[in-house]
Length: 306
Image 1 (cartoon, rainbow, N blue to C red):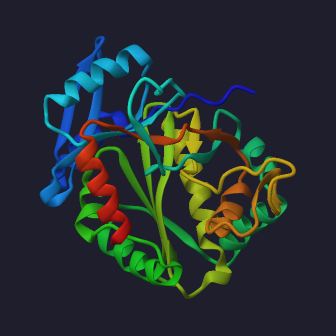
Image 2 (tube, rainbow, N blue to C red):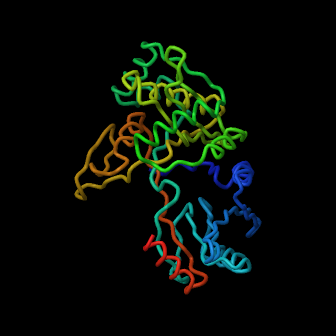
Image 3 (cartoon, helix red, strand yellow):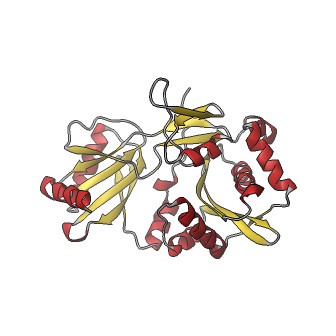
């Protein structure tokens, strides 16, 4: 089965504007009449590198990109392309992807009834339970509601978070929508969804430690899916799950026709997302094209020590 072709917001002008508003230097250039967008990262006294996410390239285009990047004195070029391409002609190092390498994508061209029928029975039940228990959903941008819930989620799940200003600037972008679940007038869960061309993306979610038995995140996710439909999208991207586990490799856990490593750190969120259905989409691994070997070795050494 062919993988869905998503509109990648990371290469959009709106994302460029958002990143610039947070203080990130955005580097825009054109190769073969195709715009390319990268983001500069500082390595303190060592220098800097350029990160280019989710872009379409080829061996020929990559040579042109490298020649362009060399002019700006970067130590290396970090890339996460949309498709596999030969990199053996360059000095490179394989690195972990910054963006999710595996995700689940829902075809929202289907009717709401069809979408519900593709969900696991427990997922449908939890959506209805949240409605029955009196959860109400508000589509309104409110940074304080999201941030306060994010602090609870960060402490509970032990993940790294952006600063409040980052989310605040994101909510100012025309790409973003926010849904918040309320119970008895209190915000108990909140999601940030991005809509770009044919794709809606569930980018950030946060929830309270209280009232978890009310299943508010399930209803929030359903509202996000319906938003994507209403905005004319073809796809809803759940933005990251544990890697798909093939038969005979590792100890698997499966839910709603998706299998992954049972002890993977994303197993909880993967089970939650898998319940909604969707097709698996995988991206190539990331790599660093090394432009200054000495400084790159020094960078890797310092990173290993720290």
